[in-house]
Structure formats: C-alpha cells, structure tokens
Image (cartoon, rainbow, N blue to C red; front, side, top):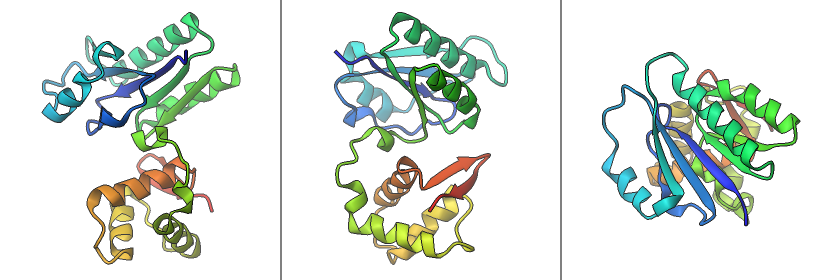
Length: 192
C-alpha cells in the first residue's frame, strides 16, 4: 500500500479543490492560529475523504509557526516510514531548503504550489493549447510576465479571452508542474 501524504499550508493557499485527489492520498490541513473561517466548499470537499483528512490548528503566533508544524509532521511521517511520499502544498519557497535536504537523504518529498501537480501528466504536454502557450512564452524571452496575475492576463489574452478562468489557471499550473515556470518571492522565472 502506498503511503502518500499531502500537507496543506492553509495560511498560504486557501483555494483548494480536494475532490479530485487520488484515493491513496492522506491530507493534513494546517490552519493558522489567527484564521477564523474555513470556506464552505473546502469543508464540503474534505468530507468525502473521511478518515484520510486531519485538521491541525497551530497554537500561538509567529512568523513561521505554521511552517514549523509542517516540518515536524514531515519528520514524523518519515520516522514512521522511510517509504512515505510527502507533498507540501504551499507557495512559500522557505520550504525548499528542507525539501532539498530530505530528498538528499533519500526521502520522497516535494513542495507543490498547485494540486494540478499531483494529477497524472498523461498527454498534458501534448495538448495543443498548452503547446501553443509554451511556444509563445519560449519565443517571448524578453517580454515574459513576471507575476502570476500578469501571466494569467497574458494567457487569457493569448486565447482571445475565450478560456474560462479555471482553464487559464490549469494551463499555468501545468507550466509549474513541468518546471517551465518557478516562483521566488512572488517573481516568476522561466526555463525553456
């Protein structure tokens, strides 16, 4: 049986759709001490996961309090099983040194910034819309958007504003998943 865990930094990413997660994925949602409300859609989506979901409310305040909770839980998972695979859902690049350290020690750990990165990639890169986006961004070396919002506007304009917002977001998520785009301190970098 696979031991796969998704640890969600809910202070950092509040919009998540957990309805399409693989059946073998266990989810822990870390909620900051000052967060008082959880969106109804998230709660409704999580109910279907039953015992595969756990909520952790961080006690106390601090600039990285929630991050330390996630680091602790990663350590617990890997102590329980060295075969575990862990994903940290966060746009906080502060997790990257820890993830590199763990992977260097042979643990399977990855920070992701979107749930789309967990979806199978079969045929994703062959999609014509995605291919077109990659080709356009590769050619526009000096005029690439430097923020997520500008990239979303760029993608929308590229498709004559006919794509629904969820499709624009999906295409951007694929760019991150394929390693074509990375984000550091809210600034995008490209690898073509």
